Amino acid sequence: MRTTNLMRAFIVLLALAVFGTAAIAQESNNLKEVKIKTSVTKQDSKDKIETVVDLLKGVHETNLNLEDKIVKVKFNPKEISSAMIVYTINTLGYNAEVLEERDCTDTSSTK
Image 1: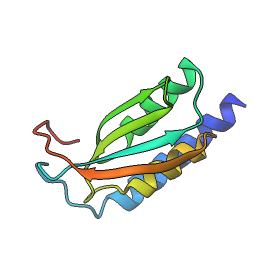
Image 2 (image 1 turned 90 degrees about the vertical axis):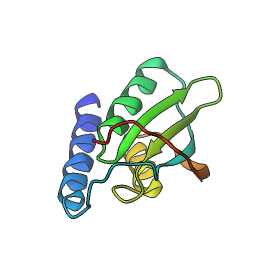
Image 3 (image 1 turned 120 degrees about the horizontal axis):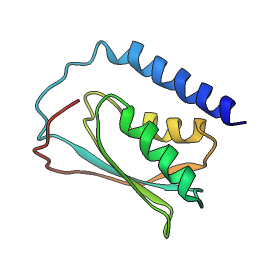
């Protein structure tokens, strides 16, 4: 089971690497933040989602709150979409759906 989930995550990351090579990386003050409702209930699942989503090209910050099961992700929309983030979480075996997406300002460095 664990190997299957890790393999799925690897496949998603590989696909993103292939498709993401055409994206142009820029200094980002054009970030978006998406709130995604998940089915996560355990700390190890939280850690897995945060780790995998953080590895996605264009993602700047990931924070999942176990109490309300909402993950907040700051990302560069020129490099990745909220739909791809949701797809990644679903591929890991957790239900995920966008609750809200908005523009935000962040001066942190890009990946």
